[in-house]
Image 1 (tube, rainbow, N blue to C red):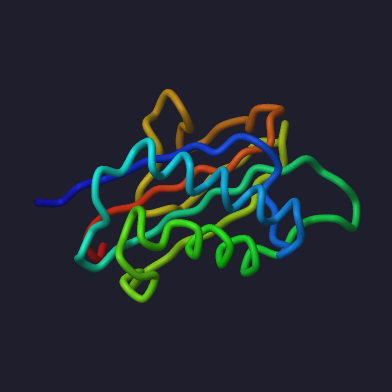
Image 2: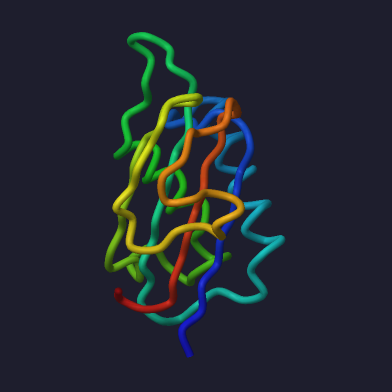
Length: 132
């Protein structure tokens, strides 16, 4: 059976291994524990939508943000991050019009396909327990 999980983590996405990055990883893990009963054993498709404020020269690296999130979900949403066989990650700027080509999206009331991103920094994490 195909199952989808959507998480929303409030706060600025962080890519560092320092204190702020560790706090962000804990927030991701805590939200995943709230949503996930048991880790999936199957292949996983992950969609990560990072919403950040426009700070000139301070936009985080999407690859590093993705690694922090996928590592934080290990053992909670899925057994091992090697199960993530497909991923899609994007950075959006708060308050700007955005359109995404993500293969799965959060519930329409949380993130319509074409939307003016709210003024809050957050991370939307979508997981599907199959290759799509």
